[in-house]
Length: 337
Image 1: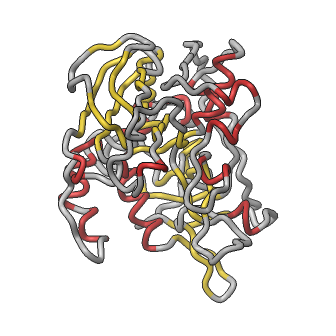
Image 2: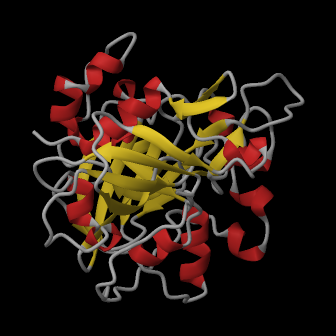
Image 3: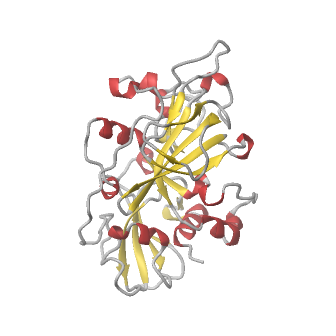
């Protein structure tokens, strides 16, 4: 049977809950078509390196390819004090709840950071604000869109004051029990195990989508929905994974991705269409049993640049398969205690 990456979703109607977000700092240069004044580049000085996606390189300069993934965007500060410290305030991009506040800069590459949860009908979108100089809200606080929640800075792994920026992410929680998975399973994949300092709100438990696209669409009053975000993403590969005793946490939170919905018995396995970052787009029922995740299809028509995938898929002697990192990723997605 020929395999394709076409995502099949439930035919059940999905109610529309419009999603709007606003710029999380005073810098709105993106609206004026001035990306060089909006994105803070890495030491490469390329504006693209501050954007979302595969925009950074592990190669010596000048780089041929950008194989390193950047989960969010880095926004330049606009105002500085006499010592050169940034003065920009950081705002909540939408109304929601502060679900996590890291107040120890040394605990994370993000330094001081905040995570907010925003509810759109049955779906949650999360926003992350990293490298802050100060945190001005606490976990559990309810916030309004545009409310001051912190101050832009350069805590964490930014390195130097001249690269101060707001690291801003928009995305989705992967598994509501990341802590349990990491403690019982995930840590075993690590060559040098380290403790999980952030519980379920580790950056490794989120899948991002391009914040710039959402900011621009919101500014233009375009209708954005969570199912619409998924529908706009391009498939890269397809995997068969074992079904479990119950639907996965991801499936329960995004049931429109599940063929036939959640009312049917569990199949023998699921065929999952994913983006290049591993974002699930659809779950198709399969009668073919399997013991572990296995790659079924990969879009080999793409260029090398387009096919980078966070190391989830490896190619050995001309044959593609899930890497150890890919197996770890699907273990996290499938986890049930």
